[in-house]
Image 1 (tube, rainbow, N blue to C red):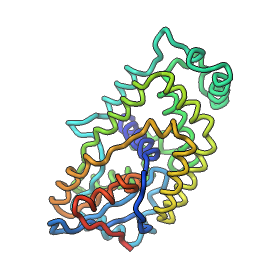
Image 2: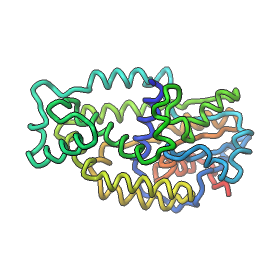
Image 3: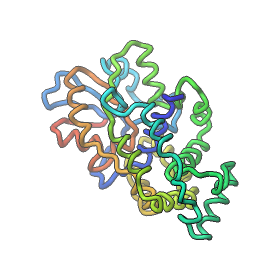
Image 4: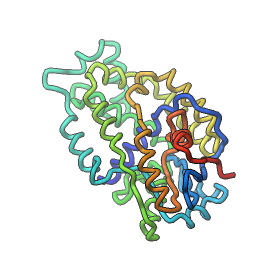
Length: 307
């Protein structure tokens, strides 16, 4: 169960990560990395936690590249970063509202009613009984929204062995371990920072994000459906346009997430020097001026789509 937690948190962060301004991209999920002194080509692959792993069979050349790669690389906790248990402990320590604060203080009567009716109608306790911080409720509500509409993936959340096992990245990670590939996790301390930003934000701000998330349920669900459709079309430009639209529609929700990839380039460069690698990350992290494709190019690598 603990391993499920980090997968879910990373997926939520990645889905809501900002793409910022994006140089025009070719539509591909698989990108070759070469140059800058590399003796072997490596590859960057955009995954999606809401897509079944069987989709991999439709990506031209994927399995040949996967099988030939020496290393399988993901972002994740290491001994120097946050662990699954660390996250669980932080949730426990920061879960509850202060004793002197209630939701009737955080919301106007009208907004209180909106939030309460939503929670009760979806099987959650009412706000007098649900004394968790708004950030935690937002987290739970958002997961319910996005995974409840993707049954192939949602069913596997209940699996006590693998989180979202039917989705692409966890499937590849598990298979790589079973095949004896060299599995590398690049340290991802950003998850800890994002968690702390969420739970230590002023309670009024947390409450505003929760209210916006609940009001924006249709926007969130429809955007995820559109995102999956764009993903299966390998339409990165469509994803960028969708992201820009969402940031305008849900500004408070987006302001919570600011995933910094700049400090990942050194770790990726070290991996690339060690031999042919397949680096699998959520597709949103490829995109944007500060996405991995552009950052690797700025670092001197040639990054080009695999057709």
